[in-house]
Amino acid sequence: MSQIQNTDPIIGQQFGNVVAQSILGRGGMGAVYLGYHPGLDMKVAIKLLPDLFVGKRELVERFLREARVSGKLQHPNIVRTLDVGQSHGVYYLIMEYVEGIDAQKLLDREGRFTPMRAINICGFVARALGEAHEQGVMHRDIKPANILIARDGKVKVTDFGLARSITNTATALTLSNQVVGTPNYMAPEQIKSMDVDARVDIYALGVTFCQFLTGQLPFDGPTPMATLLNVVNESLALPKEIFDPLPREMREAIVAMTAKDPRRRLPNIAAVLAVLKKARDALRKAGLDSTEPLKGPPRSSSPAIPSMGGSSGSFSSRASTQLPRSSPDSFSKPLGSGPVTPPKPGGRKS
Ligand SMILES: Nc1ncnc2c1ncn2[C@@H]1O[C@H](COP(=O)(O)OP(=O)(O)OP(=O)(O)O)[C@@H](O)[C@H]1O
Ligand SMILES: [Mg+2]
Image 1 (cartoon, rainbow, N blue to C red):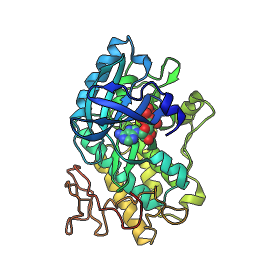
Image 2 (image 1 turned 135 degrees about the horizontal axis):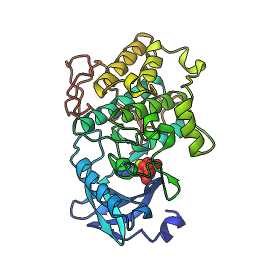
Image 3 (image 1 turned 45 degrees about the vertical axis):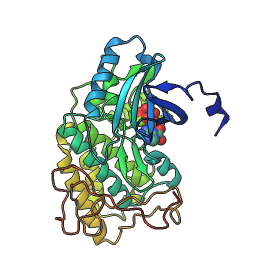
């Protein structure tokens, strides 16, 4: 345990029934701590919201409202919200703790993902989004750091609705001079403060998919404002050295998900799952279906992501810890839960 953690005043503090034990990470919207819930005898994650909430009644009310809505989301690919409240003047959210790594850190480690690994992760994220969208909840901050990958390879999306509770204000992009939300993944209509709908999540998932494949952000800049201008004005560049060897369906999937005009973008998650399936089938046909990390043998911290369809090619949506043997080869609706496979033997230490 580092010295910083020992001197962190949050450690040892109680939030509801939960005591903060160590820090898990920091992001644009506060910090996340590991905690222990004695009543439930389980580890949980505590998200502390930044000071910008203090004294902003409207923001706080919206946050609480959104937390209540996202708390109702129950899906194997969505991190459960367990509690929300205020303690020591700080607003907090208690969530299911996912022991593993977030996709951004995994990407930093591996450089980029094989196409099949990228499709599998995005497919599970799409299922999570499908459930949320059906419940009327947008995510609004889909990006690799909000995609958690458990040690056993389960993929879980976190921070549902949280960005909305902050960004849906008159000061859509900046609060306390900080950019809220993540410019690199923001859809052009979000930046232009136009009406937005669930298609912003499809856009952000397309950017994430592209980043998984290339290891680069398709739109970036030296400042948040420069990035935002690039998102709005520049067309998406897909590096030839990555995409030329791949079936054209990979390129087509990204282009369809990231269209700047939302009317030209894939309209819903069912359509996203359909293009991902097409791309996956094309990869299999081309023999490009490795899901292992690109750099060398799998490391103890590089989880094996279960295939969206498993070897049978199914995209069944029933909650199960085993891949159904004879389900149809489709990403078909309902978009409920994703099959998960048991960990690969020898792939990781636990
Ligand atoms: N439920 C969780 N279980 C385990 N680790 C988590 C959980 N939620 C978040 N983390 C870890 O904490 C890190 C910080 O999360 P946080 O949401 O504060 O930052 P972020 O996702 O980078 O940015 P943003 O504030 O825009 O969401 C994550 O990247 C992840 O590694
Ligand atoms: Mg986050």
